[in-house]
Length: 72
Image 1 (cartoon, helix red, strand yellow):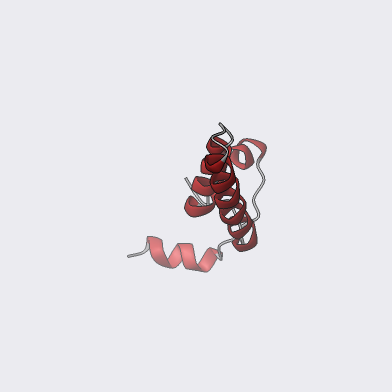
Image 2 (cartoon, one colour):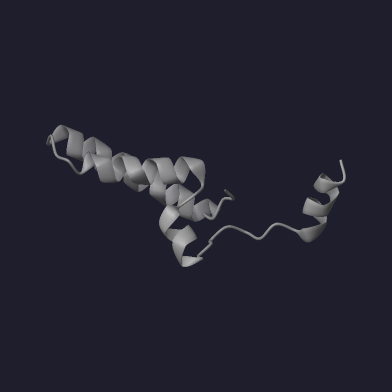
């Protein structure tokens, strides 16, 4: 599965996920699951919702780079 999150999208998800998890764990709330999901998305660079909708904020990969990698 290829990455579909760009640099800033990943950074925002990591920050938001961490903040949501810390606050929700302090208040002992189930919102920590949302924070965990955002954190996992940000760290992996993949979002299932984006994949279903065909959205990508990641920079496109250059065609010559993939062609060069396939010849090895």
